[in-house]
Length: 239
Image 1 (cartoon, one colour):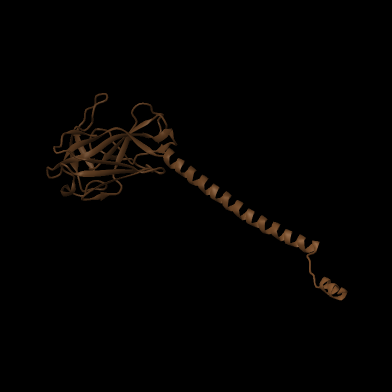
Image 2: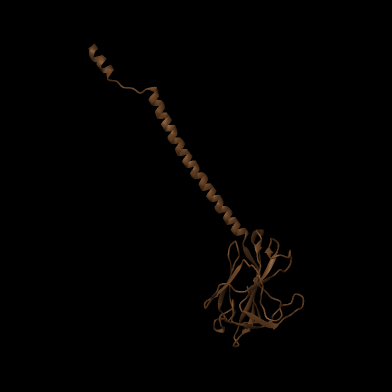
């Protein structure tokens, strides 16, 4: 009996303190690596989210918003066809954000032929026009500054800019030179040159829909979409 008991005792196995320590250290190392990986991924995701938020804020803070009505002016094109030769509207800086560069490629003096190419102008905003018959990628436009103006071409918070989009290359007409008057009431438009309508057969007529797109250097694109009324007046308020 005693021999059998002693044989059973020799067959038992156990775990030492050293082996326990090795296993615990392995668990700690694995857990640390896992925690570091999760933490790094979380920090990276947070940084990407922050960059996305700031990019969205910059996009909004550098955007234009329309103020008031869109005014279209009727002119007579070569061949006697009536259409709009310029569109005028006012824009402001959205949410009192960053200044927007509105250096114009053209100017308009209200006498002789308009618009006039602004020599050496490094304009940043591109204005395009489209309708069912055509797409004009870079049409002439000019700017004036009604109200408060700090005498530069940056649209700052608190300022408004009156954008005139010229859909004909040269316009002649009788200008009202009185203070606050409307220039080029009776316009004769020339087509076929750089930037304007290609020919009189493609100019928009009554009930035609068109879109003007303003693409500033930074910020969101501003789309102005309107439809011409059933009768073209000299001056049309396209609300």
